[in-house]
Length: 322
Ligand code: UDP
Image 1 (tube, rainbow, N blue to C red):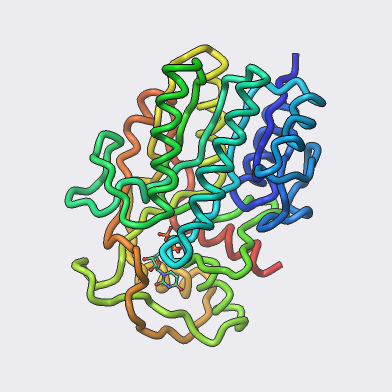
Image 2: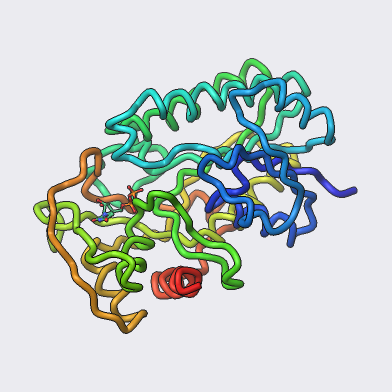
């Protein structure tokens, strides 16, 4: 009895790793993606159904065609800086389109949902690492859009019995060891891929956004978590839903923080390439430090990260070189 999992945004960076992992675990995967920021060639297994979440009739077609057991959502816009400049884009896709999806799921009585949330729901935090129970005060529209869906999910669970697992990613990074899928954004805005592009000579320099933060070296500190560790957690979250367990939200991070400068230095070491680094102004909407406490995921899901920073940069480098 093979389960069908519908992966919204399965042609994107994290989604494509999830699709590969689901396939390896014996699930049948259907990818729903409008290919606006995803890539056809990142879908290496499963069936691609092109479509947009704004198009409820197209969604209904797909839900009618397959007997879907669960839905995973990876189709959000994710750039903090852009969300500050163009919040409408974020609220439309990250909120309204997800409500469309939930509407159609409920029409088809599908009540298992896995949602990609973010550490950005927490906003500034005084105390690290961050636990799930921390007060949520997102400081940018991206984080707010994700928190809105988390709140909506709570109400849909109470009212409609929709069961969800929400994962708050810290900094998703790295690539599959196969080298056939990896992080690809256009334009690229994320730290590790930008550093690697600089190492490859595709960019003249890497900019450090802000050197006056209240951190040990003045640059922001982030918690990097490998994309396959994220995918593994989702499998465990999915199995929990199939067992009929209650809705939950989990942090996904490594529990370790590295500064932007440390990431740059580590990349120089891994690639054995020296490149130009330039200090620049702060980017709007960035909290100084984000580090996860993942003990809840460890306790309830039996999950813990397997990839350290070196492996993250190595696998990402392996992909970028190709
Ligand atoms: N960053 C940077 N230079 C860049 C891109 C990012 O200094 O070219 C910093 C950014 O300001 C943040 C950290 O690197 O402090 C991680 O940013 P990214 O966009 O990768 O992920 P986010 O934490 O926003 O999800």
